[in-house]
Length: 135
Image (cartoon, rainbow, N blue to C red; front, side, top):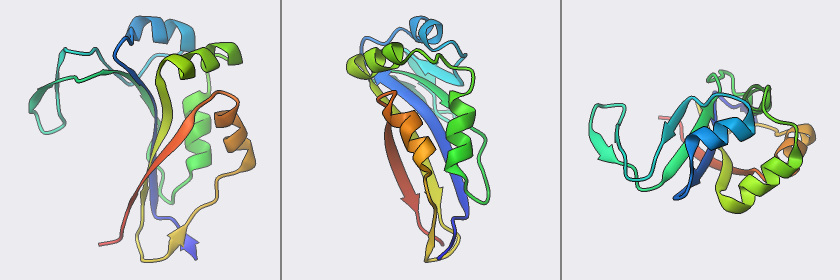
């Protein structure tokens, strides 16, 4: 099995009652992007939409070859180490690492370390993965 071609990762916190300023205060790190429910936002192609729910996210640098472990570390670096804050957030909102896994060939893979799984698990952060096949 070959090494996965590329990975992208973001910490996403989502919910209707989400207050981006409060999340930033609790997490202790500025987001890459925020959306308030009902507020307009522009898509990457310039189309304006209305946010169906609130969201707060931090994105890591895309890695090629893929390296989800370093991306999770990059995202969580500088955030609160108070597990009670993380667990409270995960009770109130959907909290996830969204990972994009991009294949360059038909059979590639990656390993997620036990350290990374512990970092996510003890904070109540789920891992949501999209896998994109080779062209």
